[in-house]
Length: 333
Image (cartoon, rainbow, N blue to C red; front, top):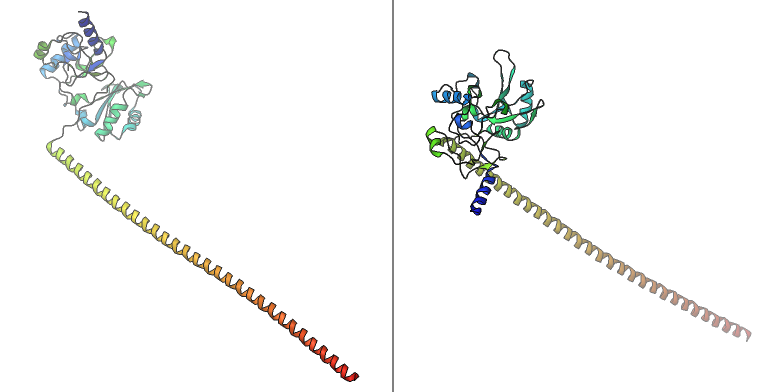
């Protein structure tokens, strides 16, 4: 028994930070903190339920939204009443190219109603703003950002008719299931039969997410032709990348070949120069040795000639002395 109680307590504690988001709008579910209520809890929910049941609201009947791409449009709320179109345009342009901006104003006074719709050039820019602009500050006011639920959320009923999402606690008309106030994972048994009877989608048991996880906005559904066109562009890009890769590889191979050729030429040139220098060095050595040998032979020849001259002069002198002595002897006799 204790084990079952502990297991139940652990299961409940794990659900405290688990949430889920509404994919379609139902007024009774939007007024429920865990999405399992089967009765309206305030008069505004009754009014929204009446509008939904009787089809009194047309989300595409607003002439101001004609021409806007809902998949590229963001809802911006909690704006300061002093925020102008220029200020908002400058703030939201940080996330992408703004194509159109509509600040909702009072039909009589012209004062700002505190919310606006910003249309971007592409879904990528909208996604970037959806992720990064939420809870940012504009004119000292913390704004909220959401996708265009008026045109993209089935069954949507606006706030002025008792629907919407969010709200203040003081009003007693909180609405759940949106980005700012998601549904909590139910801690009580889910009345599946009653929810089915009322057309309310049940909570996704086992598929809850963390309250810190950013919910993804709806994506544009692409037709078969669009998918084929996308696949064709993808194949062309892939083929182009492959061709570019092959060209780059060819250029790199050619560059390596040229570099190797230049290196070979440089090596052969250096080798020839080294060999030429070596031959020149050996030739200079031989020339030096030959010159030294000739100088040595010349020196020996000079020494030999000098010695012969000296002997010749000595012999000449001795012969002259002998002749002189002989001449004196004959003269004396």
